[in-house]
Length: 97
Image (cartoon, rainbow, N blue to C red; front, side):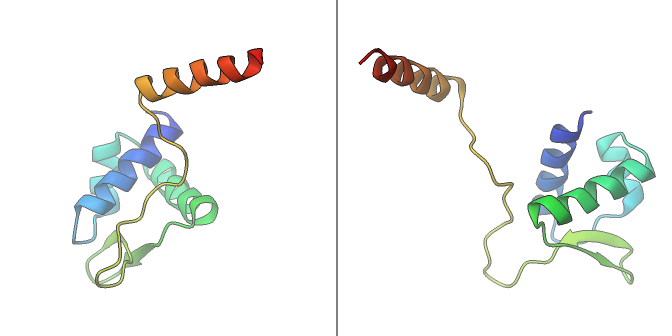
């Protein structure tokens, strides 16, 4: 699994769970080793400002969201194939004039 998809999957896991997820469970879910999981979490914290915390009592990672706060989302532009096609056509139309 490449870095981009690993980050997306990790985001899905944290947003779907209400309890911390152990590193070992993350290794299995993402089919990655310990170093890769730790590196991915650090990259998400550093570059995406992801609110990932570790709970020693429950031995797991989680998103530290306040009551009523929206789930953390990966920043960026997300388009489906139809939307991308429409943008490309629009771009070409404007380019001609």
